[in-house]
Amino acid sequence: MTLDPVHVDGIAQLAGRVSEDVADSDHGEVADRAWAEFLDPLYDDTGSVVLDPLDGIERQKVPVDDIALTDTAFDTQHGLDAGTINPTTFKNGLVLDVSQAAMAAVPSDVELHRGRTIVMTVHTNDPSISTYDDEWHGGDSGFARRRMLQVPRVDQYEQTVVHALALYLAESEHALKQAEVVEDLLVLDGPIYPTGLLKWRERNPELRRLLADEDMPRDVICNYVELVETFVERDVPMVGFVKNSASKAITRILRKKLGAPWVDDDAFFRRVLERLDDHGDPKTDHLTFTNWFRSRVGTDGMLCDGSLDIDHDRTLDEEAYEVTFFVVYDPRDDLVYRVEAPYAFTRDEELRAQLTTHLLSEVAGERGPPLPVGKADELARIDRQGKQTLRRRIEREFDTSQQRSYNDKRWNAVEELL
Image (cartoon, rainbow, N blue to C red; front, side, top):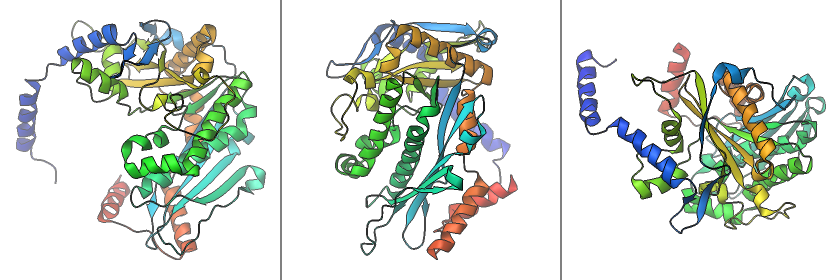
């Protein structure tokens, strides 16, 4: 049953009472002040610089139609993504996730698109089951690699652990495996480092312990460090295209300095970059974007500030690994995107400008993520039917069934109606 109109009106009236105390225009003024006064550079509570603009603070705009047709410096591009079936709990106590990673090319490369790296991660608290770490196995006439491994035991966050390790191991291994085919530019679907793993240090003592004491998550992080080194040594740039950033690191600092009202960093940059006409409606004819920032805020600084010890002999100077980024706002869909790259590439002013132009052109032309990212996402995604088929096959292999809740019944019924 839906809400009756009288209840809809009542709820709207409640919202109206809140809106009387929240002046949206004031948020724009606070955003302008934060942008002008606090980000050049941004200091944390200890007085350390955690966000530093590479070219000075600057908000820029480009006509959507013009930038979409602009020739760029990258004749070929490759995108990489990984998809999962999502963590699944079985009645025998096993919790697992399965991830497959794929790389896409522009122009297309059918054989490359066929390649897959597949990882199954398994968690169990049954002490009678010994640790199982399988080797890599081939498949699909050599186009696929598969591996199963048992993740470290935890008392909670089992689903978080199996999901993150499957996703990031598959993605990083596939990127390293296929690195040599990338000639001009690699675009990761997501950040350049495994943010989901790095955030373990902030989430829970048990996850923090895993990150500090267990080899498996640190080995996965090492893969990403090696990936940066590989592309720097090959003189081929790599970037990360973040479609849904959940970071609150910048706004958390700004909130202490001037009472920032935004829920996360994306909301802050949206207010900084949006353009309104005389009637308060958004102007949609231009993409707007920031300068590049060198970032050590939140998880961005973990691989360079010594707070995370990983067993990897680095081949580059410390600054080369630092995260840099710029933010793009597409008013056509009211969406914010964050583009990341290692400082090893963006400290070169000419290359930095080439990357900026290319990513803006892709966003304008695709009205969203760059084409190689969209293609990689399509290749790596495991659709609903595929997830169900795979889970049923696993149930037969385990001689058990998936542990279900009432939400499974409710939402499956809804999906069948759609």
